[in-house]
Length: 69
Image (tube, rainbow, N blue to C red; front, side, top):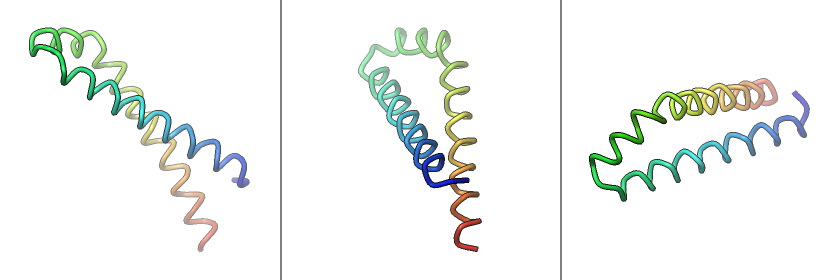
């Protein structure tokens, strides 16, 4: 993987991480019943975003390992 692609993927990982952290932090400020309703509606999407973040991070980690090894 070239350096530009690696940087772009790393930036995407960081953006997803910050977005997920922000969403979870926001829901923690809500009443428990409202928080639960929102998590029931959005939970699947949050999990998909979390999975995408992990897959992208894996690409970055693999590229780093290949570059150093």
